[in-house]
Image 1: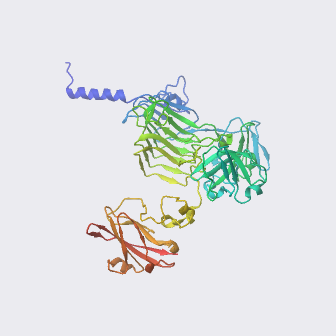
Image 2: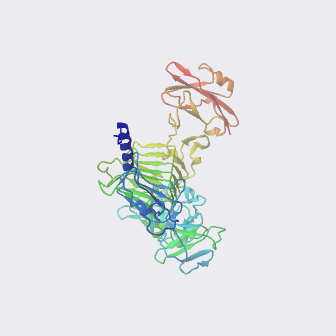
Image 3: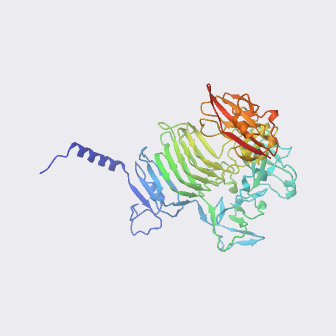
Length: 582
């Protein structure tokens, strides 16, 4: 006997049909699996290339699941329309981590390298602009010498300083750089046609070609197109690279794009009979246009990266998520090829010609990613609002900081052209180039980053802190009572000569704080506002208190202090903190 489905059964059936309609198609990529016949992306006949799968991504729930292996290809993603809770996906299969590689193996055309004076050279088949021997990223031939492998390239003191006779002729687009001291002259190098990386615009670093120089000259000229400003000789610096004459130490390399000859000095101890040599030949492995609600996760990128762009007002990118990706050396300049434009870095843009496209807000999510060894900006994104940058790790990126072509402003390791973003739990380690700042700030070992009086940092207002400000920014959650003391509680190496103030994180909702200071822990613990240990009240949102002359900090002593919080008429007693001086 035939029965009519109940209302509940009909609803369940409708739910299943709707799920099937929006669940999408899962396809597989496995370059290592042998297939007889046509590859259709099924488990039995997976695609060999990610690009073959990516071009079929279309609607909600479509997936490309990529098996482990090394993939070298151009992947185009276009026309994807996922949904907020059901995006289209490109991902590593389960816990596998496929590698997308932007390099090719490098071998000499003649079958063997010419060796002379420790230098290897030979014609190669590929035009490359970044070079690896084994796990070592080689450094472009440069002067003064510095290497990436020991992070010397991040040390501003390994740049050359500029002398007093630098000048700019804006009208004739000519500039002159004089070397501070005589090192350039003494090097006996002719650096004409080398590439100059010049930090001459305060925060701005520019790249240009050396127009004229002769051996034993201590200055050179260049074509100046960077705007009207004065070169501050006390702060400005430069280095030169990408000329064969500069190649003189292990881990440096040079490539002549005209003769196609690669020359290098291997890392010390390298067995060249077994070493693997690789060169970068690709800028972007994945390019994304006209796509919304796309998730890319669990992949690794070596010497290549991702670009997403909005080519028109209607073909925009939006709601793109990068999740748990690992970027190793994702971006690198083409200075070795004589190209001095901006580096092509990891870049997602939901804007068309700098403006918001129709119907788009251009928001992105970057979750749990790793960025290492990017020359230039590690990550840039351009949208309207509401992007998320969470739990990412950035290390050893942007050593030249050559991210501008005109004077004014500047870019950083992470560039955001967006508002109302959520940025939390990210870690940045040794990014950008710089001087040794330790002598410029009060006591960096004890979290005091205020500039030293009359130092370069003080004179030029460098850094986030002012020397004499009454407020000192300390990150973290405000507690019921005061917390996060500066110097830190228990510190044993506080510099007495620079300890004239104490700072703290104010208590939650407290606007006034009472400060106690002395050399007797018990007295400080029991002190009241009538005690000699009381040194005054800090009102409002201030959190900096000067130590009075009667309590002057001296070397070799231990000091105790306490900060009570006042909320209305209620006083919340603080902990007793201590530090010892040297």
